[in-house]
Amino acid sequence: MFKLGSAIDLDTAHETLATQTRCQIPGLLDDADYARVLDAVDTVPRWVLVTRLGGRHLDLDAAAMYDLPAAKRIEFERQVMRDAKAGFQYLYETYPLYDKWHNGTLRPEVPLLADLFEWLNGEVFLGAMRTLLDEPRISFADAQLTRYRTGHFLNTHDDGVEGKNRVAAYVLTLSPEWKREWGGTLSFMDASGKEIDRFVPGPNTLSMFKVPQPHEVLPVAKKVQQPRLSITGWLRMGEDPGPG
Image (cartoon, rainbow, N blue to C red; front, side, top):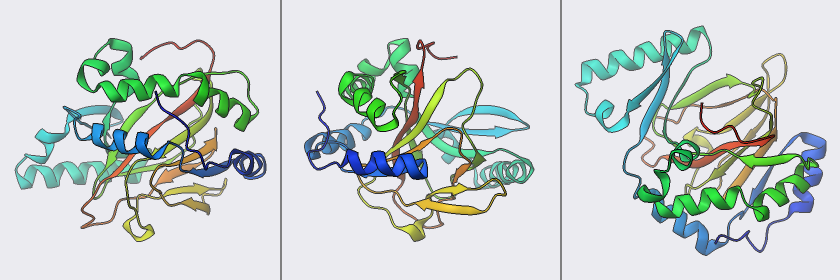
């Protein structure tokens, strides 16, 4: 089973969350566990490219989309960006751990990621998060593996969805290296839309913020070769309803 990193500073994170509503915790996982997760990501059998077109969410086969003729790919990207100018929009790849765990396909496909999902929903992790957030009612975590490639983004939203009972959002960065100039940073805004803070992804670093809170993932810059890999999700209250 997985272990928390031996050098994490939960006391400082608790203080930062209390005063700033967001924090970063480097070294969340034990080093050996982090390395095992990185290896497991390479065995994911199928990634889904998610976006919205015409106000409707789409799940697309990521590999098939990259195999499209250049003209069709360009037109698709233009449609995505037109919708981004009009409202909420996103473009990134995902492997839905929560959905797959609930429908019984996660363990047969990627056993180690099933172990990780169960650890995220176990007492070691959830207990630490309850203390960190001063919220004993946190009962489960949902999760997805996300991969942001060149041009991928998630524009401004606040994660406040009625009935989801979200206490906080989290992003566990898996990428071994990431630089500010590569984009893909987590940006926080005030009520007027002005940026007030920015988190640069760090290897094996947990970024966490209370919900609701306006934020976005800035586009990954052109010619960035490696993807921005993360486990993302929410810490939630109440009975786990399953996918849907």
